[in-house]
Image (tube, rainbow, N blue to C red; front, side, top):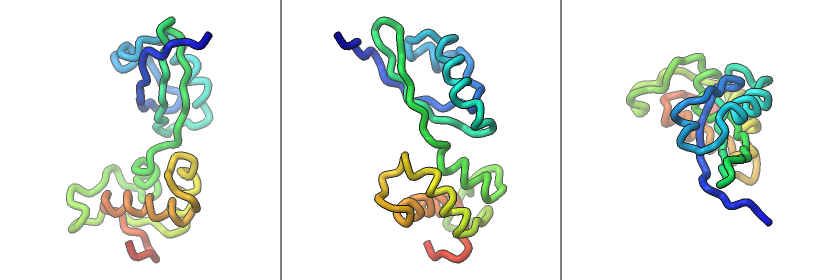
Length: 140
């Protein structure tokens, strides 16, 4: 007999840094057990933000799926900027190369709705444009 799903929650934590708190309390799961499992699964991704989808069941058990780091975080790291532009149309805060864009797109490929790397690159390039990050060698 299958378990009945009580709730599905999407959260983001630093890799290896999940702690019990209000965000997890709303999920209705065993927080220390989740934190231990999450931290063990993400230890090698230190320094990254890791999105996670938690499926909580009525008996307080859970499963979780790890996603790739958000494109905005990867773009800020590649451009070496603290944040995106407040007005992306007029103010550019940094730039990245096409090679860096391809690297980010290849990493994000499993979570993007794209058929090939070029499509993924266009998606990530749109994110970069909205953040005020210029892509050297590419017209967006």
